[in-house]
Image (cartoon, rainbow, N blue to C red; front, side, top):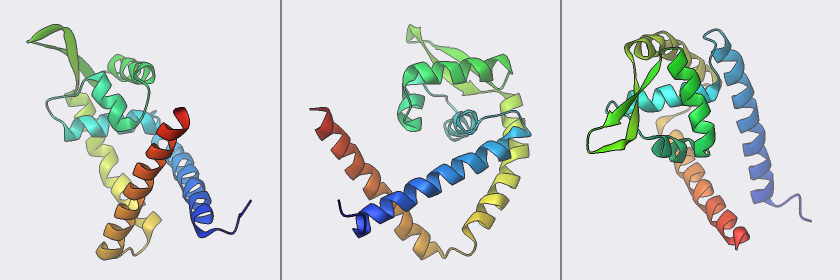
Length: 151
């Protein structure tokens, strides 16, 4: 086993960073009684004003549809999201952000952006773009490995 391979070491640091960010996010969102996943649902709906199906939410969150159902149920009970029927298909519905959800995000996002900026320190735009491209490449390659392993 080659633990010194640069790709392996980079992957381990990526996983450590992701775990640390997730845990810090849990602490950050506690004051609003939200989980990071619930915040991600609200934020996706903010970016998709017409709403999203639970399948679309699951794909974008990289989460099984049954987990999305629980997230949406909890957010709906709090009045932060609502399910709306799709006129063309009465069996389908879209999840939309409510006014209360929009107000909550209005309180959260300014602090979130400030904290995220502090987490990154001074990250030049060019370096950020390069990092984003690298992370997207890793995600695509990792998905390809997962597909191959499932065969």
